[in-house]
Length: 302
Image 1 (cartoon, rainbow, N blue to C red):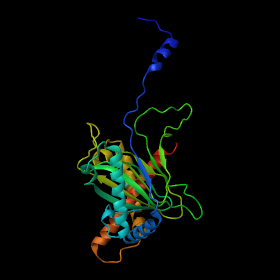
Image 2 (image 1 turned 135 degrees about the vertical axis):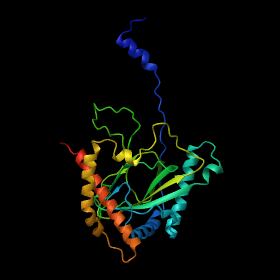
Image 3 (image 1 turned 180 degrees about the horizontal axis):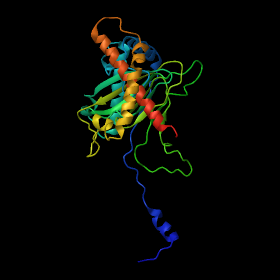
Image 4 (image 1 turned 90 degrees about the horizontal axis):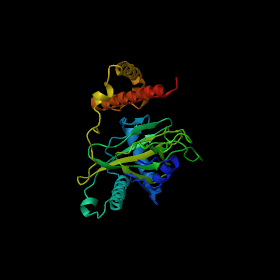
């Protein structure tokens, strides 16, 4: 066996190949005539917000509609739906060699609106599940303050590839996150498995977006053993040591339910169903705030 010096070893490996596996295609498109459409979309979304307490998913604060925006009858919404399908078709053409009409048609859409006021944000999440293939967000109004550019509420994609990151020159392990600067009329399409979050928004005007998912029977996202999504019981009760923290969080959530209940306009009807929806929204917002409070405590230095 040859006794190689360090210099010989370095010279020997100089011809090694470095391959890049599994890149993620992300499609950005700024609709050139979106100003008039966005004015109409904003009116429709804000009207819906006044009529509904919304739902709580990854949003912490703010308002999120039910995932039925694609069915709203307003002409501006249906124009948005048509444009969304057009961009998905273009992305398929770019990513599927020899794409056929079977690849381009048959897409099913689920969409919802988001309105973030000052302090609202979205926790890190992906849109994978229920057959979703591509996901997107669209900026109706990026928000901001009068006369000032948008400097908060940015959407960031996380690098969860597991690729090592040097911390000698830059100790920030999250340096490779990709930031999307909000811009009215900008539509971003990405694989539903990509994790992303929205930073706390600090503007005075509402930050309004539309998010949507697309699924198609001719596409799939491979799920290997061990990649299955964790169930609710595992997430919340995966060990006896989790119980005290969870109990404290739930008690705090219950304590702020009354405030959340009266923070929004009460239903103008005696129908029990409407009051039930209002109470459910208050519970969801209280639970989300309690969860965010726990996360903030956990992240704060001790």
